[in-house]
Amino acid sequence: MIITAALGSFRLAEKVHLGSIIGTVIIIFGLYTVLWGKS
Image 1 (tube, rainbow, N blue to C red):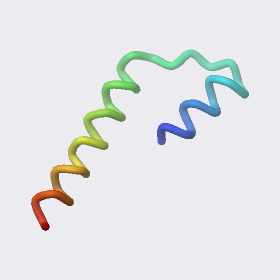
Image 2: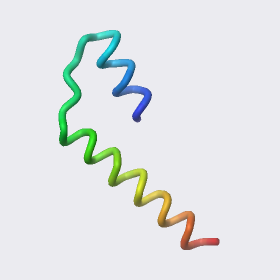
Image 3: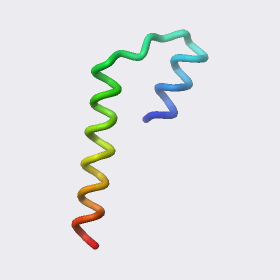
Image 4: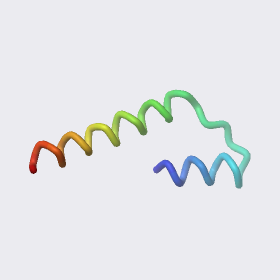
């Protein structure tokens, strides 16, 4: 998801919105806490 946003901003000259950055951080944090909780 981060790679897609980065490539989109460079290749397609898309603007990266603050909401998509915050959403990506929340998703990564959630996945990390789930994996940390299982161990």
